[in-house]
Length: 124
Image 1 (cartoon, rainbow, N blue to C red):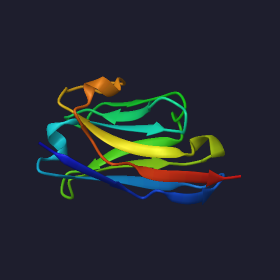
Image 2: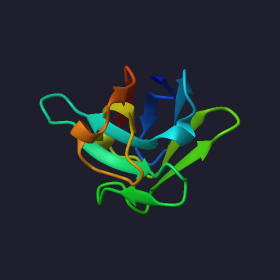
Image 3: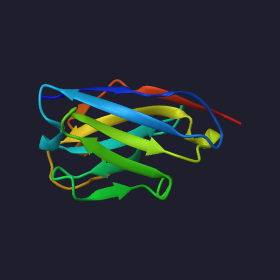
Image 4: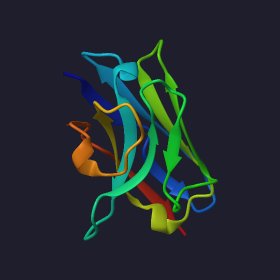
């Protein structure tokens, strides 16, 4: 079983950037397909990005494609999400999650383990 802890959220101005981190413990991040999601108040949890277990395949939602990059640092057992050109619409709680599957998947139900989330607030 893996435990996930997100960090790196905060308050940022529109047009700025953030790098979110998801540190794993208990098992290696390369044992899972890792995903990032977000949830804004009153909205459903939204898929953002995923990285396959072997680290070779990525997937991005249209809402972040071209301005986000998911990556993994096996030595530090951490997955990152770099987000650029932030807008107030990016304000949400951001979660990382781990799936036992081998390929990126969008459905939250495919992820068995979740972090507690980190708040991102983008001011206009």
